[in-house]
Length: 432
Image (cartoon, rainbow, N blue to C red; front, side):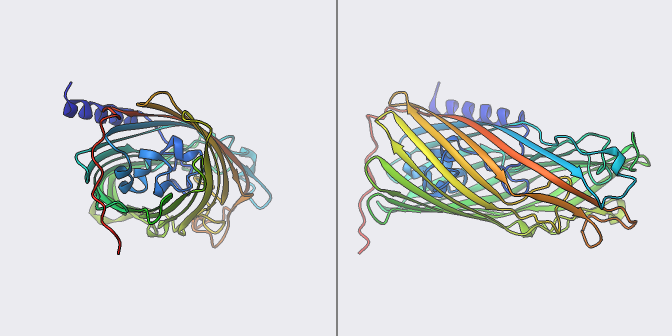
């Protein structure tokens, strides 16, 4: 099999795997952070500076210049959420007999894959296939909050080819276009009575954006990375289905841009410390309008999120030439607070605690595994006058949310060419 045909086969397999998956959102709002088995072991600390090996290109494509030769990395994450919404005093009395939501969290498998190829001492090309956004929440059909939500599903698929250039021994840059498929399906009850019919909104679209990044190695043992993922505009086309019938609709929705900064510092030959910061521009979502035939506004999607922030710190320790251990913690500021929190996505600030390990099977093949537990801040829902979801008629909904998440991720890395036959390094260009 030729190198080109093998690369195309790998891309096709990655694409098929992603299409078959449904993702659960476990970064802020409906983003999916689980894109790397190795980086998860640090709670994604230093991910923009290469702590995630090749999979770090999701956050910063310039890290592909840190991977000599021809490489593939793939990961599969099992997300196990538990989220229960229990109505409390203050809820409209007609709602209360319907009871709580049950566990609305749905277990999900999230795959990701990455490929890179070094053309010469300065030029790399790469391709990632990922699912940056996803959400699956599914309460009982008959429950106290059913007029606000029944099931909610978001699915995405992103294909991102990149080109990386190692300018000299201390700076590399990379960029590439990003093609993204986005699909959404939202369901709620038409009335607060058992067995009430549902109103269903669904739509999808393909949009385009880009990624770009830079890596800096100002001193031996120090790597700094800065990566950017652009906004992507989607013009969703679909339908609204209700007891009155089905009508075609459209809505403009923009997924947020993201800036990630990472630093990795070798303390000893065995110990490296990583730190990271991430900003996600969730405030760009605002309130998309849903229009029907003739441009008539049918409804809206009041999101109005704040921006999200993620702070992380981790380390790895090389036990020997084969085994590396990792650990990390992170604090995530959710873009959702009590003023806008909904029954579809009862998100809040959270703490990530992670451990992981890598095993170098031989000079071509490595395995990664990581485990994370997410501790969510005490959360409540208050859909009362002043809340964006509060209807025209008085129907308040007040509830407590009990949530936690476990994530298990496995991955492998494989180098297709012969590691013993190295491509010569880029020429040294001094900084002074």
